[in-house]
Image (cartoon, rainbow, N blue to C red; front, side, top):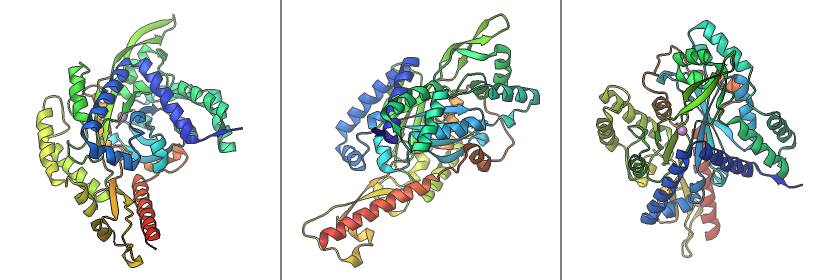
Length: 461
Ligand code: OOG
Ligand code: NI
């Protein structure tokens, strides 16, 4: 019996999900076409970028690359989602508290964690858990809890195969095929809502997000995001094609050396939904699903991240709040101006320990490396024996995520919740600890350096 690797299962699932979403939201397909053209153009014009992506193993994964997002309603749903994603080699990385930004959820990102695995399939899912305790109206909260407790978002087969994986440590080809098809059902859009329009409306009144979670059969995938190499070109392309992107690109401004993550999206679509009534059905609409694009840059160290947060906060402070349609130009100008303080060459980013890098040995025939030299990274780089390339940021940004949520929830959806961040509660629901992303980047950097140094020492002795 051939066993299928988690990488293969993840890769199959990602392809299947993309197909499904293309059928459900045709604009996503248009976006994929736009991204493909822009990426080809950008690579053709920038051989250095092509070489860099080739070195780091990202070139081949580029056309496969995407993330999705879902919103869950209960601790049990999050617990089982963690088990299901584990079958695909995806683990919870990072904790994002969106409550301070007025969105009543906390989240993690499920993704592969090793560099090789990420290159085989970089598929990830931003997964949020609704914080029902933030619904002020107690009756409504109870009704929401009761509604959620009645739904099962996974098929029986999906859970059975997950259990089988947990027992065997892998799945057969047949089981893996069955698993991806069954799990896909959880993410499907349903035009029939299991609640009345009245309940939907009262949930919606509390927060559109609450209605989006509680009033549906399952956590429909709400966007799927391809990775572009030039998000400004995509933003222009979207405008030209009439896709109505959001006013500003979230994240850092355009730079020679991209950092972290830049994102933009087109607005959610209004879709028809059939609600339950005693007599049958009542039609209404719901707005949830949208399209998003991202451009990824180098992962920042805590020092780099601190500088990023400072400059972003400064910009928002100068603007007097979060950017809107009306002050988008001013925001982009301020952002660009403030980020002049962020070094914009890979050499400086590395030397000042602002970002993480992969190291590669440049083995030369005539070099003689002494063991004592072997740890002086700076000298090795100067001698051309050590080469470095940026480690791509694989995660998300809470301020950007809040901006993406908000642009698709409509104006006035920002609510001031009084609450404390609650990692411990989140981890308890999840059934394990979330992985610290900084730890992962540090590990990748250290491993690559160790490998490069070993190669250099071996080749000279
Ligand atoms: C998730 C929004 C966050 C991102 O790319 O930052 C996100 C959601 O709307 O459910 O996907
Ligand atoms: Ni997203």
